Image (cartoon, helix red, strand yellow):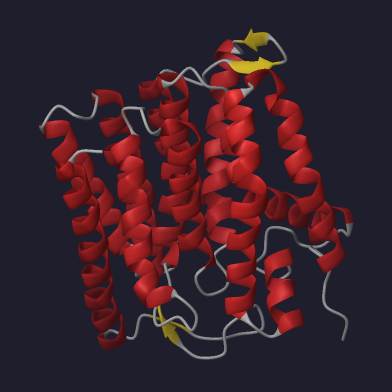
Length: 338
Protein backbone atom coordinates (compact mmCIF):
# COMPACT_ATOMS: atom_id res chain seq x y z
CA UNK A 1 0.00 0.00 0.00
CA UNK A 2 1.31 3.46 -0.93
CA UNK A 3 2.20 5.91 1.83
CA UNK A 4 -0.37 8.26 0.30
CA UNK A 5 -3.01 5.57 0.75
CA UNK A 6 -2.14 5.21 4.42
CA UNK A 7 -2.54 8.96 4.76
CA UNK A 8 -5.89 8.80 2.99
CA UNK A 9 -7.16 6.09 5.36
CA UNK A 10 -5.96 8.05 8.40
CA UNK A 11 -7.70 11.16 7.08
CA UNK A 12 -10.88 9.15 6.44
CA UNK A 13 -10.88 7.93 10.04
CA UNK A 14 -10.26 11.38 11.53
CA UNK A 15 -12.72 13.20 9.27
CA UNK A 16 -15.45 10.62 9.86
CA UNK A 17 -15.05 10.92 13.63
CA UNK A 18 -14.97 14.71 13.45
CA UNK A 19 -18.01 15.04 11.19
CA UNK A 20 -19.94 12.56 13.34
CA UNK A 21 -19.21 14.73 16.37
CA UNK A 22 -20.52 17.80 14.53
CA UNK A 23 -23.63 15.92 13.42
CA UNK A 24 -24.23 14.86 17.02
CA UNK A 25 -24.13 18.49 18.16
CA UNK A 26 -26.49 19.47 15.34
CA UNK A 27 -28.90 16.60 16.10
CA UNK A 28 -29.07 17.58 19.76
CA UNK A 29 -29.71 21.20 18.81
CA UNK A 30 -32.61 20.42 16.44
CA UNK A 31 -33.96 17.54 18.56
CA UNK A 32 -33.16 14.91 15.92
CA UNK A 33 -33.41 12.00 18.33
CA UNK A 34 -34.36 8.33 18.37
CA UNK A 35 -36.83 8.18 21.24
CA UNK A 36 -37.20 4.70 22.80
CA UNK A 37 -40.45 2.85 22.12
CA UNK A 38 -41.72 -0.72 22.28
CA UNK A 39 -39.76 -1.60 19.13
CA UNK A 40 -36.46 -0.14 20.33
CA UNK A 41 -33.42 -1.88 21.75
CA UNK A 42 -32.17 1.28 23.47
CA UNK A 43 -33.48 2.95 26.61
CA UNK A 44 -32.22 6.53 26.26
CA UNK A 45 -33.11 9.13 23.64
CA UNK A 46 -30.11 9.24 21.31
CA UNK A 47 -29.16 11.53 18.39
CA UNK A 48 -29.40 9.93 14.95
CA UNK A 49 -28.04 10.66 11.49
CA UNK A 50 -24.38 10.21 12.38
CA UNK A 51 -23.83 8.06 9.31
CA UNK A 52 -23.65 11.29 7.32
CA UNK A 53 -19.97 11.42 8.26
CA UNK A 54 -19.33 8.07 6.58
CA UNK A 55 -21.27 9.17 3.49
CA UNK A 56 -19.39 12.46 3.07
CA UNK A 57 -15.97 10.89 3.64
CA UNK A 58 -16.60 7.97 1.27
CA UNK A 59 -18.09 10.07 -1.52
CA UNK A 60 -15.36 12.69 -1.10
CA UNK A 61 -12.69 10.00 -1.41
CA UNK A 62 -14.45 8.64 -4.51
CA UNK A 63 -14.33 12.06 -6.16
CA UNK A 64 -10.65 12.50 -5.29
CA UNK A 65 -9.64 9.05 -6.52
CA UNK A 66 -11.63 9.53 -9.72
CA UNK A 67 -10.13 12.96 -10.34
CA UNK A 68 -6.59 11.58 -9.92
CA UNK A 69 -7.24 8.65 -12.26
CA UNK A 70 -7.12 5.96 -9.58
CA UNK A 71 -10.79 5.08 -9.73
CA UNK A 72 -12.54 4.10 -12.92
CA UNK A 73 -15.62 5.88 -14.19
CA UNK A 74 -18.04 2.99 -13.52
CA UNK A 75 -17.36 2.68 -9.79
CA UNK A 76 -17.30 6.44 -9.32
CA UNK A 77 -20.70 6.91 -10.96
CA UNK A 78 -22.27 3.94 -9.15
CA UNK A 79 -20.97 5.26 -5.82
CA UNK A 80 -21.66 8.96 -6.33
CA UNK A 81 -24.98 8.78 -8.15
CA UNK A 82 -26.44 5.55 -6.78
CA UNK A 83 -25.00 5.93 -3.29
CA UNK A 84 -25.84 9.63 -3.28
CA UNK A 85 -29.50 8.89 -3.99
CA UNK A 86 -29.64 6.31 -1.20
CA UNK A 87 -28.01 8.71 1.27
CA UNK A 88 -30.25 11.60 0.21
CA UNK A 89 -33.52 9.73 0.75
CA UNK A 90 -32.16 8.42 4.05
CA UNK A 91 -31.20 11.94 5.15
CA UNK A 92 -34.71 13.20 4.38
CA UNK A 93 -36.25 10.23 6.18
CA UNK A 94 -34.14 10.90 9.28
CA UNK A 95 -35.53 14.45 9.43
CA UNK A 96 -39.12 13.87 8.31
CA UNK A 97 -40.82 10.58 7.59
CA UNK A 98 -40.71 9.33 3.98
CA UNK A 99 -43.20 6.67 2.93
CA UNK A 100 -41.88 3.19 2.28
CA UNK A 101 -43.13 3.45 -1.31
CA UNK A 102 -40.98 6.48 -2.09
CA UNK A 103 -37.93 4.95 -0.36
CA UNK A 104 -38.38 1.73 -2.33
CA UNK A 105 -38.72 3.62 -5.62
CA UNK A 106 -35.51 5.58 -5.02
CA UNK A 107 -33.70 2.38 -4.02
CA UNK A 108 -34.77 0.65 -7.25
CA UNK A 109 -33.63 3.63 -9.33
CA UNK A 110 -30.28 3.80 -7.52
CA UNK A 111 -29.72 0.04 -7.81
CA UNK A 112 -30.64 0.02 -11.51
CA UNK A 113 -28.21 2.85 -12.23
CA UNK A 114 -25.43 1.10 -10.30
CA UNK A 115 -25.92 -2.32 -11.89
CA UNK A 116 -26.17 -0.90 -15.42
CA UNK A 117 -23.06 1.26 -15.01
CA UNK A 118 -21.08 -1.58 -13.43
CA UNK A 119 -21.87 -3.92 -16.31
CA UNK A 120 -24.30 -6.22 -14.53
CA UNK A 121 -23.82 -9.26 -12.35
CA UNK A 122 -20.48 -11.04 -12.94
CA UNK A 123 -20.40 -14.74 -13.75
CA UNK A 124 -21.33 -17.05 -10.88
CA UNK A 125 -19.21 -20.16 -10.47
CA UNK A 126 -20.85 -23.49 -9.66
CA UNK A 127 -18.17 -26.15 -9.33
CA UNK A 128 -15.93 -25.82 -12.36
CA UNK A 129 -18.58 -24.08 -14.43
CA UNK A 130 -18.94 -20.28 -14.61
CA UNK A 131 -22.51 -19.24 -15.44
CA UNK A 132 -23.45 -15.91 -17.00
CA UNK A 133 -27.08 -15.28 -16.10
CA UNK A 134 -27.42 -12.39 -18.54
CA UNK A 135 -30.47 -10.16 -18.05
CA UNK A 136 -31.78 -12.45 -15.29
CA UNK A 137 -28.50 -11.94 -13.46
CA UNK A 138 -28.80 -8.16 -13.78
CA UNK A 139 -32.33 -8.25 -12.37
CA UNK A 140 -31.10 -10.51 -9.58
CA UNK A 141 -28.31 -8.03 -8.80
CA UNK A 142 -30.80 -5.14 -8.62
CA UNK A 143 -33.10 -7.14 -6.35
CA UNK A 144 -30.27 -8.18 -4.05
CA UNK A 145 -28.85 -4.66 -3.91
CA UNK A 146 -32.23 -3.27 -2.80
CA UNK A 147 -32.74 -6.16 -0.39
CA UNK A 148 -29.31 -5.81 1.21
CA UNK A 149 -29.73 -2.02 1.48
CA UNK A 150 -32.84 -2.62 3.58
CA UNK A 151 -31.34 -5.59 5.43
CA UNK A 152 -28.45 -3.43 6.61
CA UNK A 153 -30.98 -0.88 7.81
CA UNK A 154 -32.95 -3.57 9.67
CA UNK A 155 -29.79 -4.94 11.27
CA UNK A 156 -28.81 -1.53 12.63
CA UNK A 157 -30.67 -2.01 15.89
CA UNK A 158 -28.04 -2.15 18.65
CA UNK A 159 -24.95 -0.10 19.40
CA UNK A 160 -21.98 -0.64 17.10
CA UNK A 161 -23.21 -3.63 15.12
CA UNK A 162 -23.81 -2.13 11.65
CA UNK A 163 -20.68 0.03 11.39
CA UNK A 164 -18.47 -2.76 12.75
CA UNK A 165 -20.04 -5.18 10.24
CA UNK A 166 -19.27 -2.79 7.38
CA UNK A 167 -15.69 -2.41 8.59
CA UNK A 168 -15.31 -6.19 8.86
CA UNK A 169 -16.67 -6.86 5.37
CA UNK A 170 -14.33 -4.25 3.87
CA UNK A 171 -11.23 -5.44 5.74
CA UNK A 172 -12.19 -9.08 5.22
CA UNK A 173 -12.47 -8.54 1.47
CA UNK A 174 -9.04 -6.90 1.41
CA UNK A 175 -7.49 -9.75 3.37
CA UNK A 176 -9.23 -12.52 1.44
CA UNK A 177 -9.06 -11.42 -2.19
CA UNK A 178 -9.51 -7.73 -3.04
CA UNK A 179 -6.18 -6.14 -2.07
CA UNK A 180 -5.13 -5.93 -5.73
CA UNK A 181 -8.44 -4.69 -7.10
CA UNK A 182 -9.09 -1.18 -8.34
CA UNK A 183 -11.56 -0.65 -5.49
CA UNK A 184 -9.11 -1.83 -2.84
CA UNK A 185 -8.45 1.72 -1.63
CA UNK A 186 -12.20 2.42 -1.46
CA UNK A 187 -12.66 -0.68 0.68
CA UNK A 188 -10.00 0.75 2.99
CA UNK A 189 -11.80 4.11 3.07
CA UNK A 190 -15.09 2.39 3.90
CA UNK A 191 -13.44 0.55 6.79
CA UNK A 192 -11.65 3.65 8.08
CA UNK A 193 -14.76 5.84 7.89
CA UNK A 194 -16.84 3.17 9.65
CA UNK A 195 -14.23 2.92 12.42
CA UNK A 196 -14.23 6.71 12.76
CA UNK A 197 -17.98 6.61 13.27
CA UNK A 198 -17.56 3.83 15.84
CA UNK A 199 -15.67 6.29 18.06
CA UNK A 200 -19.14 7.68 18.80
CA UNK A 201 -21.29 4.60 18.19
CA UNK A 202 -19.40 1.94 20.14
CA UNK A 203 -21.51 0.74 23.11
CA UNK A 204 -22.84 2.73 24.82
CA UNK A 205 -23.64 4.70 21.67
CA UNK A 206 -23.67 8.48 21.72
CA UNK A 207 -25.21 8.71 18.24
CA UNK A 208 -26.85 6.33 15.75
CA UNK A 209 -26.20 5.87 12.03
CA UNK A 210 -29.72 6.82 10.99
CA UNK A 211 -31.14 5.80 7.62
CA UNK A 212 -28.64 8.07 5.88
CA UNK A 213 -25.82 5.83 7.12
CA UNK A 214 -27.23 2.32 7.45
CA UNK A 215 -28.89 2.16 4.01
CA UNK A 216 -25.83 3.76 2.38
CA UNK A 217 -23.50 1.15 3.92
CA UNK A 218 -25.61 -1.74 2.63
CA UNK A 219 -25.81 -0.24 -0.85
CA UNK A 220 -22.10 0.59 -1.13
CA UNK A 221 -21.03 -2.87 0.05
CA UNK A 222 -22.87 -4.39 -2.93
CA UNK A 223 -21.48 -1.79 -5.35
CA UNK A 224 -17.94 -2.63 -4.27
CA UNK A 225 -18.70 -6.35 -4.29
CA UNK A 226 -19.89 -6.30 -7.90
CA UNK A 227 -16.96 -4.20 -9.07
CA UNK A 228 -14.27 -6.08 -7.15
CA UNK A 229 -15.70 -9.45 -8.17
CA UNK A 230 -15.44 -8.55 -11.84
CA UNK A 231 -12.04 -6.90 -11.36
CA UNK A 232 -10.29 -9.93 -9.85
CA UNK A 233 -12.31 -12.55 -11.78
CA UNK A 234 -13.87 -13.84 -8.59
CA UNK A 235 -17.25 -15.38 -7.95
CA UNK A 236 -19.75 -13.86 -5.53
CA UNK A 237 -19.43 -16.58 -2.90
CA UNK A 238 -16.68 -15.04 -0.72
CA UNK A 239 -18.74 -11.85 -0.43
CA UNK A 240 -21.83 -13.81 0.59
CA UNK A 241 -19.76 -15.56 3.24
CA UNK A 242 -18.33 -12.32 4.65
CA UNK A 243 -21.82 -10.79 4.92
CA UNK A 244 -23.29 -14.02 6.29
CA UNK A 245 -24.36 -12.77 9.73
CA UNK A 246 -26.52 -9.98 8.32
CA UNK A 247 -27.84 -12.01 5.38
CA UNK A 248 -28.83 -15.01 7.50
CA UNK A 249 -30.31 -13.10 10.44
CA UNK A 250 -32.37 -10.83 8.16
CA UNK A 251 -33.56 -13.77 6.03
CA UNK A 252 -34.43 -16.13 8.89
CA UNK A 253 -36.26 -13.34 10.70
CA UNK A 254 -38.26 -12.37 7.62
CA UNK A 255 -39.22 -15.95 6.75
CA UNK A 256 -40.17 -16.72 10.34
CA UNK A 257 -42.43 -13.66 10.55
CA UNK A 258 -44.10 -14.56 7.25
CA UNK A 259 -44.68 -18.17 8.31
CA UNK A 260 -46.15 -16.95 11.61
CA UNK A 261 -48.45 -14.64 9.60
CA UNK A 262 -47.15 -11.52 11.29
CA UNK A 263 -47.12 -8.08 9.71
CA UNK A 264 -43.64 -8.65 8.35
CA UNK A 265 -43.41 -5.18 6.78
CA UNK A 266 -43.85 -3.30 10.06
CA UNK A 267 -40.97 -2.35 12.37
CA UNK A 268 -40.08 -4.81 15.14
CA UNK A 269 -37.24 -5.90 17.39
CA UNK A 270 -37.26 -9.64 16.82
CA UNK A 271 -34.05 -10.14 14.86
CA UNK A 272 -31.73 -12.73 16.35
CA UNK A 273 -29.15 -10.12 17.36
CA UNK A 274 -31.85 -8.10 19.16
CA UNK A 275 -33.08 -11.22 20.93
CA UNK A 276 -29.49 -11.92 21.99
CA UNK A 277 -29.00 -8.38 23.33
CA UNK A 278 -32.05 -8.79 25.57
CA UNK A 279 -31.16 -12.33 26.60
CA UNK A 280 -27.65 -11.33 27.68
CA UNK A 281 -28.53 -7.79 28.72
CA UNK A 282 -25.73 -6.21 26.71
CA UNK A 283 -25.25 -4.54 23.32
CA UNK A 284 -21.50 -4.71 23.78
CA UNK A 285 -21.46 -8.47 24.31
CA UNK A 286 -23.51 -9.13 21.18
CA UNK A 287 -21.55 -6.71 18.96
CA UNK A 288 -18.23 -8.19 20.10
CA UNK A 289 -19.67 -11.69 19.70
CA UNK A 290 -20.63 -10.95 16.10
CA UNK A 291 -17.12 -9.64 15.40
CA UNK A 292 -15.57 -12.77 16.89
CA UNK A 293 -17.89 -14.95 14.82
CA UNK A 294 -16.97 -12.98 11.71
CA UNK A 295 -13.21 -13.22 12.23
CA UNK A 296 -13.02 -16.77 13.57
CA UNK A 297 -15.64 -18.45 11.35
CA UNK A 298 -16.56 -16.46 8.26
CA UNK A 299 -13.23 -14.89 7.30
CA UNK A 300 -11.33 -18.22 7.03
CA UNK A 301 -14.13 -19.70 4.91
CA UNK A 302 -14.15 -16.62 2.66
CA UNK A 303 -10.39 -16.97 2.15
CA UNK A 304 -10.78 -20.63 1.19
CA UNK A 305 -13.67 -19.80 -1.16
CA UNK A 306 -11.50 -17.18 -2.87
CA UNK A 307 -8.62 -19.65 -3.27
CA UNK A 308 -10.84 -22.58 -4.32
CA UNK A 309 -13.72 -20.96 -6.24
CA UNK A 310 -15.05 -24.33 -7.44
CA UNK A 311 -16.12 -25.02 -3.84
CA UNK A 312 -17.49 -21.52 -3.21
CA UNK A 313 -21.18 -22.36 -3.12
CA UNK A 314 -20.62 -25.35 -0.84
CA UNK A 315 -18.53 -23.22 1.51
CA UNK A 316 -21.23 -20.54 1.52
CA UNK A 317 -23.88 -22.98 2.70
CA UNK A 318 -21.43 -24.45 5.21
CA UNK A 319 -20.92 -20.93 6.57
CA UNK A 320 -24.61 -20.10 6.67
CA UNK A 321 -26.10 -23.26 8.19
CA UNK A 322 -24.70 -22.75 11.73
CA UNK A 323 -25.72 -19.09 11.55
CA UNK A 324 -29.27 -20.10 10.62
CA UNK A 325 -29.32 -22.59 13.50
CA UNK A 326 -28.13 -19.90 15.91
CA UNK A 327 -30.77 -17.46 14.64
CA UNK A 328 -33.52 -20.04 15.13
CA UNK A 329 -32.22 -20.92 18.60
CA UNK A 330 -32.34 -17.25 19.58
CA UNK A 331 -35.92 -17.04 18.33
CA UNK A 332 -35.46 -14.85 15.26
CA UNK A 333 -38.80 -13.58 13.99
CA UNK A 334 -40.81 -14.93 16.91
CA UNK A 335 -42.57 -12.44 19.22
CA UNK A 336 -41.36 -12.29 22.81
CA UNK A 337 -43.38 -14.22 25.37
CA UNK A 338 -45.41 -11.94 27.61
